[in-house]
Image 1: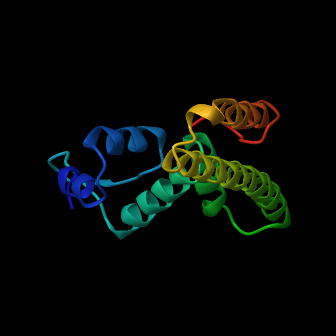
Image 2: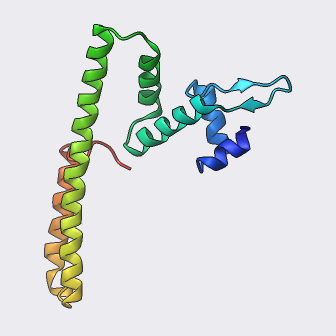
Length: 145
């Protein structure tokens, strides 16, 4: 499959595909005419990249994981992978807690609006925002989206 088809299949731009290739994340074969040829391995790698990006992994973190995948299984590799995963699990847990708090706050605001009590509860609503902001500042959300 060529780059245009490949990009369309995964709903990403050809520029993104080229960038991932430049970073070494994708390794398509080159045909005699210079065109890139994307195979099943490239498809699996791109799926891996897109899922991890959606989970908040940086491209550098994804690159590290792909490099670890290529190494032989060892105790050292396992220790590094495990520590990395533990860190990401913690970050995702913080995101979940933040979004649960946000969901509750938005639900409460919507209820106040539906009951025509928004005006009289502006201070309550502002306090919800202030509390969420404080949570972000205290590490409640690992990074901004």
